[in-house]
Image (cartoon, rainbow, N blue to C red; front, side, top):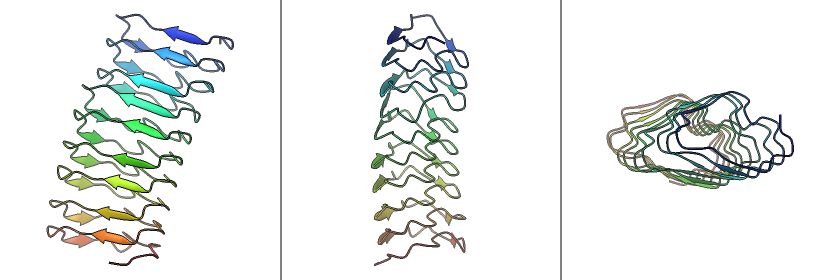
Length: 212
């Protein structure tokens, strides 16, 4: 625990940041991660209340649980990363800006769960799967761009995105699964693909604002 540490530059060659490495570094405001980094373990930057922006190298393949604090506001992921892994930004309630590279092909389960301040997300072309609960409880999420490459949207992917106003589901999607857009109370404009064959009974439950 280094409660007064304000900045750190991790040298090239480091491949793993172990669990709790910078946990409780309350004043840590600047972190430079090396391109050699492959893994960030549980709670590595949890309780880093001053860390508001971070650039994540494209070579990172494994992210543990509760890695980042709720005060993280801006994230840029460099090209090379292929997956936003499960729970990667779980409960990062302060996150407002997210930049994903076109190398990403999957968004994992609960990847952005509870990112309540995220106003919009542009999912890059090339992503084929949006995981279960990926954007669950993203209360401020008003705009989402889903590319034509997406073929599978898992259950509860956009559950309780209360500010989501319109959505176009691309051709190739065959199912709206359980709770996918449940309690998206502002959703008023919905475009469904001709390939759709099944809509779960609660796929749109609580969507009170449908217009078309």
